[in-house]
Image (cartoon, rainbow, N blue to C red):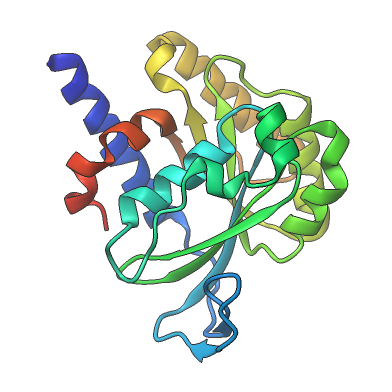
Length: 224
């Protein structure tokens, strides 16, 4: 029971911090919320284009699904499962994201269009296409691996595209010891500096996207 309570606390704090950290310049725009819906309308909240970037299998799609699940039922947000986000047959067969997918959700303050970018090196062109519209990005780094080749490549591409602000989510914190988490955070900050980002002040949040998917029904009432 104590372990479950601790994990719920990690998830609650993590996703609240992520939402509060995305503070890039905003604008109201017309937006098509769901594929297939042809009627455009004006959002009554500031809109932001964000997305998940990072190495393959570090949990980008799981995090995206977890955010939509926690926010589902609030502010007209709809839960998008992992399988819905990675919908192509090849993606399901290989268990990786190939094409950039876009989901949308809202908090009480903003509306987000969230692009889940592929992390595999073979699909870097798809990542560039997906990231091209982003104003901010969530860099996902697995606590079990630290920064990896596509972590660094995605940071380089994000900088070249013009993304200036990031939030880092250190995923899989539930299976890493505290010392490892500290080392990964230090490594991430050094890597951010190397690629021209503000490594000292970039928000870094640790948590478990998978845990959030499993316990979101219990914590959704206290997420913004």
